[in-house]
Length: 337
Image 1 (tube, one colour):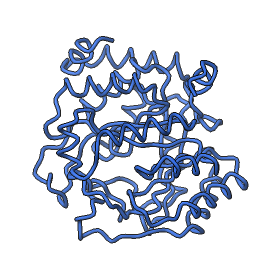
Image 2 (tube, one colour):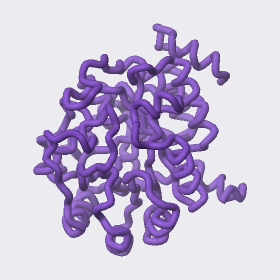
Image 3 (cartoon, one colour):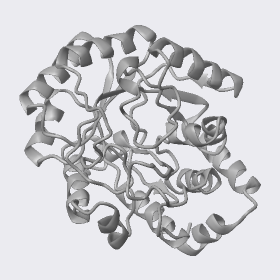
Image 4 (cartoon, rainbow, N blue to C red):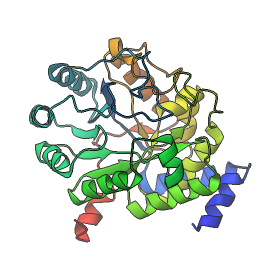
């Protein structure tokens, strides 16, 4: 799709045809399987001060926590026992885990369990990324949030857009399956910016793209800003599916937090991944990037039952494979690495 066509669809109040086309492309390109990736939020410590995030370092109201390496491993074991074929290890951006400790954890996970492992722990050096890959990490998720550089600098005052893009380049060069994404409805964001985001996603040839609505957090400088809408988020998701074709697209927790049926709606307009929370219940309430996050009182087994039931109700099936990139093998064939 051309940029002007994307903008036109983002501004079109009638979504019925767009959503049908996105669902058709989803079925054709990735099938009816929904991949479940167990999410483990192992630390809420963060060195960044992003204006939109509840975990920002200036937020003194957050009770900080950091799971031990043994706790993280035990939680991965729980995910494996529940039937997950893939886990996502996520934290705020921090330097409290030595690289060798993280590598030891990754090696142990890969040795003990037949699981795909995604890391989502922020910007690191190229050498650290290489060490994580050698230790067994399969995927890395690093969202750029917006491709509008001035808006990026305003919302992330202690981050560099250029460095973010360089990190994504390093991850690709090192052979990771690379994920990124944006927030939809950010203060100062226009449909034209979202169109540019989508075209950048296509250019980056991302293996997974995670998006969600901006939800104003009362513990941040953007507490009075209007939140984004689920409608615009779903239109963006549908357009990403049509443009990127076989990229893995999650129906994110933020969509479900904004609307009780948000994740179901996302699965019907392009999404093919769900990321149920496996984090121990005692930590969940302290990992809130935005308010009113769903499932913070649930136990890991509760999330499995809820999510698998949701998939069946939509006439879809829980995928039995780890959900590796559908772009990865063709990229290797082309010699892109």
